[in-house]
Image (cartoon, rainbow, N blue to C red; front, side, top):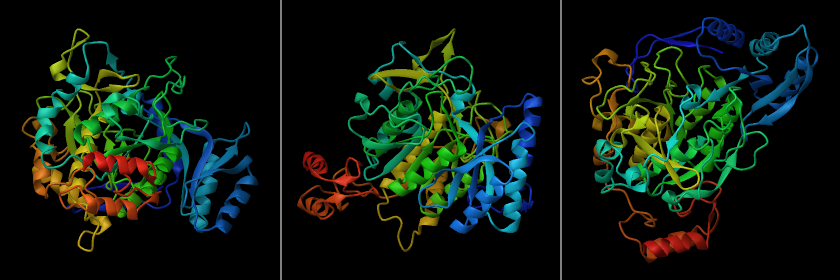
Length: 507
């Protein structure tokens, strides 16, 4: 681990002075976590018996396993992030050993050059799971209140749709899964997906009985992924959404599985990745894959967290290669729960008003939950969804990206510039939090004015029409599409008769 201390920052067009402290091991993180717990600060636990390493070649991996095996039992490879030399290793401790011993040994291998980096595996969780924020249904919410919620006119969603609806864009949602059968989605969630929850094969949003935070209440975050996906769909109704399930129904996952889901999203061809999940440990694995995403032109959006604090900050929201999102209310004022930090980029609506336990629906965030229902919720997770949807609108307007003049590593900065230039000033409503909520509150209607109007769904050659020319494009792409392409209209990994049917309906 090589922590960096940012002395001065202007996001994206920054002059950043970094003080890199070499050879500080994850043991420091373990100590700080223990110290934080003793001081009553929030912490995320270690995953027992698991460590993550990145190594340059199989020989170095074998040397690592051999070195671990000389001191610990049960050493082996649990899993690997596909296509990347990032491995999840197992170990067992005897009564005289602790995770610090594992950490010291592995960091010794880093110092020798055998490993690129190493860290122990930590738990990550939704911001709402961290603070026991639950959704509330049966209070008069329905499809009408969903589409008419305060965030729609606040962000100018209807106006934005005159210029972009997100067609041709794939948004991956790393969360508890998505209930694709919810009628609000209308087929805009892919019927394929992936699960990275150990022992779970479904990527749908299910109540799996998890009480992984040990509070005696299982399934606390059941519906979280569906709610998030619904808000993305509200903003970008023609973007395809795909589920990368990395969290159980308590809203918990871990560093390795979350990074694995992000890597899969990149490989699957996602343009935008919504990560309404965070951890206070600055993970090397997550930082590694977020950097890869940025380098390849994939935009990662991260929720700031719901603890109303600057410290500890949450990642990936505070990663410089992701967009970090705070929450505001219907008056552009900071939501009482929202984290704040100089590394955050934007604010978006995420607060809901409850009076004596009853939601004021005109001042609430409303979204779909499994079973065809709707609910009220609040949190930075949902602010993050509004950002992801807006990014999808902007990316849909630039089907030419990446290009010779817009190389993949520049796309994050380009989109950041569009959102910053078109956003609403956030400081006037929050003078006591200047510079800590992001540069602006996003405006979807303003953002889409920065680029040409986007093509509609089915306009595969983006010439403004759906006709025989688009049919030719689809037929030429017929077959497997493991990486998302525009002709794969339902984002199921194949260009086939189902895509042809969608195109003909749009003709």
